[in-house]
Length: 290
Length: 328
Image (cartoon, helix red, strand yellow):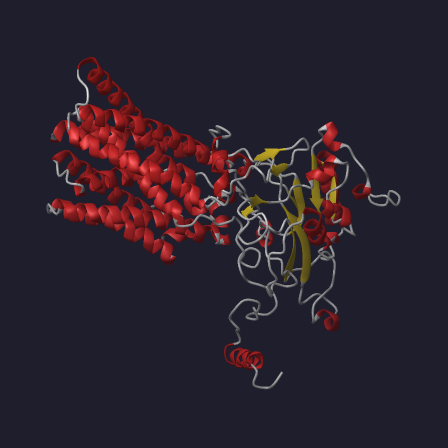
């Protein structure tokens, strides 16, 4: 835990892969300073190619969104709401109270590594697999770039990498630094996070830590603090979960994400019924009009 | 940098625009209403990813539906002794079964790894099931066509001819079985995704794709010279169902969640496609203008396939459609 000596959880060696322990990320925007070190570390360690520089004008966020060449993405939210007990805004200094509430929130977004993953179920080649630590991994040498995972992810995380970038044509997303984890190392983003806004660890520990943090923040006046970990939907929880202030929609997070396989039953029923009806229609047409 | 350089001029333009309208359009600047962004979600960005598929996929939906249902017509024709029609229908199926994998491979990000589609058999993935259905279809259509042609050309007599007849029958039955699934699974493929306008219509889509396939197959066979009553009856049936689906789509609106079907250019493609293969084909057929009805249906079936992919792109890029769909 934080404050437990010089070595924090993010700096320790571990053998979660060997012990097959489920691990996760807990990302906390209330301590994020928006430095984007996680984005840089992720790109460098994983050799994620440069996908262009564009000025978005959306606060300090020029990364855009998660995609084939963006596996960590720091969001910059500007909201006209109170942040905890802070007194901010252009009028507040003069009048002494918060007449012009304003808050700036940073949150590092990442692949959620769903308990029930849409991309994994959709993949027709078996390129996407579940690892020993419960993360979802795309095997780059197997993926043939069919693009079905792209429309099957309820969070819009995975995408196909366009030409002319290196390794174009395949689907890419966060690997949870599986290569590092096998060697007992913490994922690159968590390792570099200077404020431990990104915490890596055992999933059960992190869930307890998240709940505790929400309690603490609520006591400190952050009334709209909540955990974003949709366990009651068909996704059945995410392994990279977030603490958020306010509604998930503002972070571009779906309020009730569903795994698309829940739609299969009704769609296949309709398909079989149509198939049988077509055969019968064709037979009847020949029987009665010949 | 001189005062007349293009960048300076652009700054002047922006200043003029800002002064007049209070708004500067274009990426990067959003001054209307102050510093707090008012776009839905996170700066109006997509919550789910729109499909990356290009023109090959809607054409594959069209070709796959047409050739799959052509095998169904071949089976019915064979049972009721329309040998010539069965032969043409199997030829259509065979040409389709060559084109379909080519289109699918062309769309892959890494076409040389297409064979990885056959690494696993995965019932929970409609894409995997589709690959296997197409394999099964091809494995029945090609030998079925060869047996049928050898039988029809009277290459052999006696026991051998009898064997060819039975083999052709069995393979045509297999072709029809896989064919009817090939025409309808594409509706499951896009219906069981995270794209709101698609999954909200997951029951309608297989019906639409399947019946559009059946109608296209009979329309093409009519244009190839088989102007017979059973195909006309199938044409009437398909156009009637498509008309009903047009009404269904108009009634079953889900507000912002599936507005891509009713607004934008994607909405127009859907509507034009459905009108051409629904009411217009029905009216033309009613007045006996069979070739015109057939052409109208074929164009409609093709346009609406492009329409549904376009709908996926618009709906996937619209954050409000995802938020609205999750409230249902």
